[in-house]
Image (cartoon, rainbow, N blue to C red; front, side, top):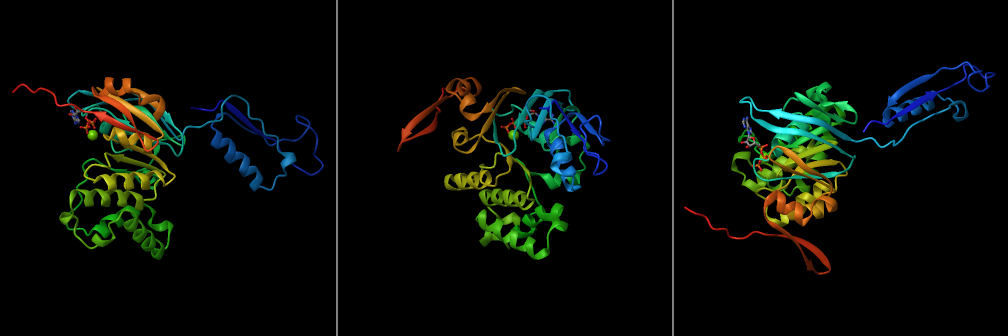
Length: 324
Ligand SMILES: Nc1ncnc2c1ncn2[C@@H]1O[C@H](COP(=O)(O)OP(=O)(O)OP(=O)(O)O)[C@@H](O)[C@H]1O
Ligand SMILES: [Mg+2]
């Protein structure tokens, strides 16, 4: 979503020079077209230089000044064997959104997430984070903005859980004092309810405990954008709710693959449905996650049950005849 606007900053060169443009001697900066953030940056820069407000003429022409936090255009992905795993995916996401990606096994969800997170290089299409293409970001820049909880993380089993989580702080190590990192680490272990396991080697943890450790490591990175591939896998029902509550309360933009369709209305703001390499629907949850869409995408009925004054989503998964 590019903003079609121009910014012109006029400032008189000396005190007596107070006439109207074009009579004034002008220092003029024109950006056209620019993004809203660039307008704001230039405007603030003018204020930083102590230019009085009445000496600055700001002209923003054009329509919407909404800028997408994440902008995805025409993504495609072909595997080395020539198979097309992703076809023409485009969408834009505002800052602070919680996007759930759902779709059947093999639809291309992990493939999409790996491209969006910069794990897999972009060959076709583009992903822009606050206007900056992932293609132009160094791996350190990416790590300072983006954290990923992968579907198959396999850390060295000899690492203690605490040391593993602390690895998440490496990209931001120089930003804070050691003592602050220590406090932040303890807080994250507490939030993810793994403090008691801090000195256990990773190899000894249960599936759910490992999953919490992966999430804790990602949080330790203090990302602006968090990707999770099926984060509720291995978690018990209470831990699922608690983990998604924690993630969605961070105030950052989150993109998560979720097979738990019934969790989506409670925790996500947006949903992307995928099927056979395509993004088949994208938008606010209430618009997209309809009974028809779930039946078409997954072949099961999605129902809303009334319980204690709330509408509780449920899936009607039936026993099917299997011919052996
Ligand atoms: N390197 C590869 N070469 C060829 N095919 C691949 C490769 N990697 C993945 N695939 C295939 O691409 C399809 C999409 O894989 P992907 O992992 O993105 O699916 P997914 O939607 O995340 O599925 P799941 O819900 O099971 O995790 C699958 O059919 C998979 O077998
Ligand atoms: Mg997957």
